[in-house]
Structure formats: C-alpha cells, structure tokens
Length: 429
Image 1 (cartoon, rainbow, N blue to C red):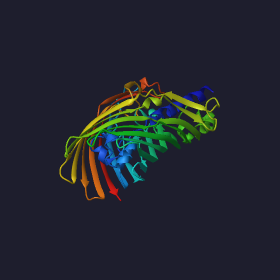
Image 2 (cartoon, rainbow, N blue to C red; image 1 turned 135 degrees about the horizontal axis):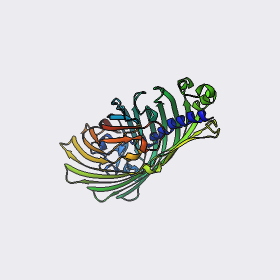
Image 3 (cartoon, one colour; image 1 turned 135 degrees about the vertical axis):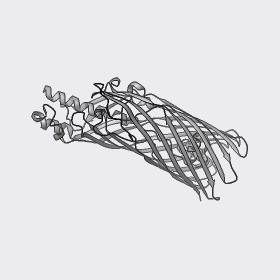
C-alpha cells in the first residue's frame, strides 16, 4: 500500500499541474475595427455590429440589416531560458512554447423598428495552445495544453430614448480542453486528459449618447460556470520503471484510465468606454475593463468511476488564487479622405497570475499593446477593416516550488511577445 500511495501521489501531481488550463487565455480580438484602436472606446464606439461583443446596447446604432465577419491570426512567441531543475542543474532552453491560433467572429443584426434591434453573434473569447518537449526539466508540471471555446449569443437592444439604449444577450459557450503531462522519470507523456462542456451565461449593456459627437457605454459579460466531463487516459506500461508498479499494476491502470470531471469558470468582465468626435476627421476614445479572474480559486478533479488511492471519487485539488485584472486603452482615428480611416491605439493589459502562482502552462505577464488599423469604405454596402498589433510582454520568472504543486521543482525565465493580424468586413443589405 505504501508503494501504491507513492505512485498515486505522483499521479496527483500530474493532475494538479493542469490547473492553469482554467485561467484560459482571454481573446479580446472580436472586432477588426476595434482592434485598430487597441479596443479603446469599444464599449461606446458601436461603429459596426462586431462592437456588440463589448456592449450589446450598441446594436441600436446599426440600421437596417448588417452582417459582420472576420478572423484574427494570433502569433505568439515565447521562450523559457535559464532553466534549472530542482538540483540546480542547468537544462536546455525551450523555444516556441506558445503556438499560433486563429479567432474567427461574426455578427448578424437586424433593425426591427425605430426602437428594437436584434442580433446573433459567434466568436471564440478564450483559448490557448502551449507545448513543451516531453523531456524538459518541468515536464512534471505540463507539456501540452490546448483549450478552445466557441460562444454563440442571441441578443437584442432597445432604444429607450433618443439618447439612451439598453441591451441584453444569452451566451451559449462550449469549451474543449486537452492536456498532456510527462514525467521526469519516464521522459514521455504518461497522462492525457480531455473533456468538454456546454453552459450558459448572459450579457448586458447600456449606451448613452450625450450628443452627436460624444457617447459613453458600459458592458457586462457574466461568469460562465463549466462542469467539464471527459476521460483520463494513459498506458500503464510507461510506469514500468517506477517501483511498485508490477505489484499494483491493475489498480494503477484503473486509476490512469477513467472518466473524470472538473469545474472551471470563464470570468465575468465589466467594461466602461468613451468615444468623442473632435471634428469631421479626428476622433478619440478610451476604455477600461475589469476581468474577474478571482472567481477561479481552485480546480478539483473528481473520478466519475470512483477510482483513486482511497477508493472515493475525489482525486486531487489545487488552490489557484488568481486575481482580478485591469485593462486600459486609449486610441484615435483619422479620416484620410471620404473612404479611408486610419486607427491607432495603445493599451496596458495586466496579468492574472502573480509570480508565486505562475506555472509553465501559461507563462503569463503584464503586457503593452501597440496597434494600427485601416478602414476602407468600398461603397454604401461594403466596408473592410485590417489591423496589426504588437504586444510586448514583460519578462517573467517561474519557480514551481512556490506554487505548492507536486512534482519536481523547476525555475526559468520567460521572454515573450505577440503579433496579431486581423481582417474583417461589414456588409449592409
């Protein structure tokens, strides 16, 4: 039994290292036009239907029938350098940890009458892909993390007065996660966890138009509580070199291959925005957003088969202690002529994880955003928007001994940056 408990303790460390999955990766890039201004004033801008992601009340500024579509290519670059194992031995640097991804979006809106507007949107607001070599020094704490989401939102907005609008929507959010863990002993992926869930949240917004030149907005997207159900899979033969496996092989295989569940929350978000036309050519805007990551404090894995070291359903739990974050941005737009619009933006994005809680799954840190965009009014029916963003992330350090997670300790220093390209169009029927 003592040997079996030693092995299951090691397995618990593998499961516990999956906690960063729940922090996710917030993808703000749901509007090509708004991205050109670093999402400054996105809650108040309402320049096309895609801005409804930030404030659903902005639908009241979209006359007639409109379709907005686009996609954003996110190309991160991250490296772990000065890597040391728990014995202080220098290990090889790890490059290309975070992988590129595409975030598509669309919004369809319809003006019902002078007061009522309805719409339907689809986007991917959270996601990440990180991958390390199976033999890196921190393999006990994760090798592959792949999380994807898809959210579909029917929504409506009502113009209460000529100046004041309210809006609401229902979010149907699907999340899928795939996690791999290696072992410092076997140097191979030994446990794979995969699961998914579909759950519901809501969206609220208000827009106040002070005059024809100035407007203010507030938007809220609710927390969505997901109960992920899936499977844990592994080949027990990968544990042959671990003392005690031969005698307890059947029990270990039952522990390694079973149905599991866990809960994770995608956070609530509250945004405030302001937009002002200085004259016919210049406009300025600003945005503040609070993301309530503190709703995620722990991750608990439960066996749906009742298999663990004690025979009960509980497998493992880790305390997260993520914090709420702030996002600030300012931007400006300039009409080059009657068809072309230049957009510029600058933003500061705070990390959700402090140094003492940072894990290899998400080498997160504070970031500065530099953005530029270009809009082209092709004709009365069709507009195009393109944008480019460079995100400079602060250097960050990792020391897994501070997290309290099981597994061999590793220290490292991370450098990272992100380049973002986006393209979108608006078609007005």
